[in-house]
Length: 197
Image 1 (cartoon, rainbow, N blue to C red):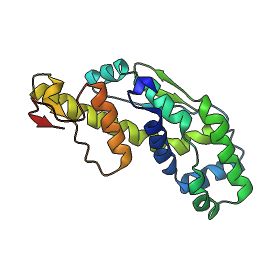
Image 2 (cartoon, one colour):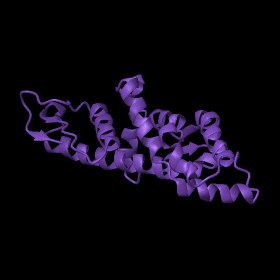
Image 3 (cartoon, rainbow, N blue to C red):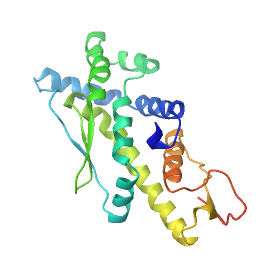
């Protein structure tokens, strides 16, 4: 995962955390759609918007499209979570979603448009990944906005900052690390540090 500046093992752990946050209620809702004859193989785009042109430009520069695509293509229903789903969904129906993620998630693509980043994925999984990938996007935007303001405060010298990712979740810590590395903010204090982000 070279474009992420983070090693593959850490990125894989991050994706497992994202996968573990797929909600059983969303699976139940999607099952109702299946029963009503909804075609779930059709593209169901998700648009991730940035209303700040400066942040949008940075995200494009940072290959955020590739990052989001790498996240989406690795989301699956985690085997350690199967029992939670099977307590609410019968096994045959559940296999549809396990197989769907296994075979459909890797086909997802992300496109950069003037409106934002558009995640193209089949309807079967789109509603299930929407809350997950939306949360990722919101946290990236929040961290990027904060870190850019901190950089301005120290004369755009990233060496005057260091990342102290004290976040409530491993996902938040990972996303702050990703943003910090993209902005060249060190992860350890150096000699001329004047602020912590």
